Every structure is written in C-alpha cells, then in structure tokens.
Length: 115
Length: 114
Image (cartoon, rainbow over all chains, first blue to last red):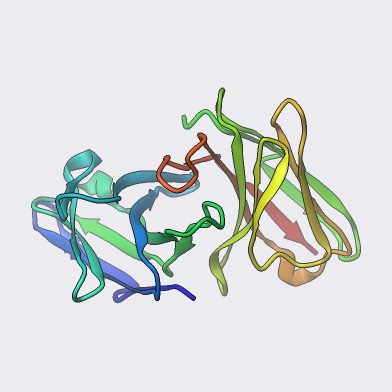
C-alpha cells in the first residue's frame, strides 16, 4: 500500500519570504509524484509532477520540487511567495503498476501568506 | 477553467435520500475519476472509468455507484445517504495514459446531508 504524509498542516509565512512545504511518501513500488494546489472554493490544479529524469522539477507560478528517492521525499519550494499563493497544497502519488490512475493524496498543507 | 464541468454546484438533501452527481470531462479525455473531499478523511479516490469501462476502484461504499456513458460524461449515484456522506465531490479527467497524463479537476459538487 502507499501513503503520503505532509509534515505541516499549516504554514504561515510573510510575503516575499521563501517557503518549503514538506512531503514524504511510503510505497513498496515505484510511484509518480505530484503537487496540486486548491484555491478557496475551487477545484485542484496541478503545480508540477515528477515522472522520471532530473530530480528537480519546475512547475507553474514559480514553484519547484525536488525528488529524493533515498529519503522518499518530494518537498515543494518557492523562493519568494506572494499573497496570491495563499491556498491549500496537496502532495500526491500514483503507484506505477497497471491498476489505473488512482491519485493518493496527503492531508494537505494550508499556506497562509501575510503582508 | 479546467474544462471539466460538474453539476450541480451545491446539493442539499436529507438522510436516506438518493442523489446523482454529473460530470463532463475535457474534450477528448477518455478517463474520468471521482474523488471525495471531507474534513475527516481528506481527499479520497473513489473510482475511475476509462472509455466506458471501470478501470480502478478505491474505498467506494456499496451505496455509491458510478458509470460513464458513450458520450463520456459520468454520473456518480449516492443512495441511502447518511450525515457522514456530506462532502465535496470532485470529478477529474485525463487522457489515454492515466499514469502520466495530468488529471484536470472540476470545481466540485458540495453535498450537504441533513
């Protein structure tokens, strides 16, 4: 079975400060990794994904994430946040075996950017 | 706008009732997924359909069922509703490669069971 743990349920940060949202996963098989963002009263939007290749992945809105296989982590970073980044962020995995595209999500991290 | 549409946006009903949630995928997408988001369970995968066939199943209750029609829209049927079924239900769609293609999420249907 697979599981995803987002280590912080809430992250408050000031505008223009850097931020890191932490994600660890557990899986007995290889996985693909994703970060999604959910703005208030909206659906989820893909920020970035890691399928293979370079372990540093760049996404939309200036976010990037680094896949670390030995630590089974996929932390999300942004060097300078804006008020508009206030949202809930979800880390997710899909196990790489042929059983459909089931996304397994972490519990979410609420990012609150203050002026 | 993701291109995935869901109706209705809000649904308020009573315990014991049955409701149907509808999803239209992005043009050309063959896979449709249903997820439930609640405060206590978080985001949980329910079921996936690919071109009309069930492809993967999560922890979907027996009271819940879904189908995908020839025009690729999907419906999620929830019956004998309980208070605990109150949640946000999302539909997502993706292309042929369900492992690597991005899942695009609709805006969700908020179900309130009174």
